[in-house]
Amino acid sequence: MEDDIFAEYENEIRSMTFKQGRILIKLIDREAGSTSYTILEELKGKSSAVFWQAIARIFGSNLNWEYDPVEERAIEEIIKSIWQLPVFYITFKKWFIFVAIENIFIIFIYTMYRGS
Image 1: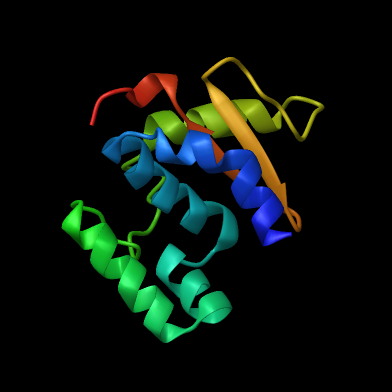
Image 2: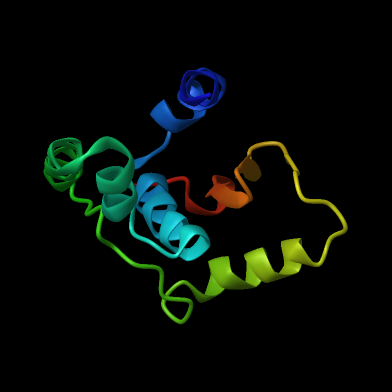
């Protein structure tokens, strides 16, 4: 399952800007209720989490970032308006991609934050 998800979304993730990656880290925390670091540690082990945290830090990110709806007010408004739609999986051209993984929805926001 992990390989299938990776194959399907690898290009989108690799083409993200630094800012988009930072937003994704925070959105994972919002949707999962745990930081990316904690999820990696639980699924892949501490050494893997430490490795990916080091890579994230090299690029100015932090897998322990948490989502703050006040700080990310524009994103929060977009998410709230999307959840009012009667669909759970939506793809708009380069705007949003929703990925459903075991009832956890991860949202990639592209167009709003094109620059790094």
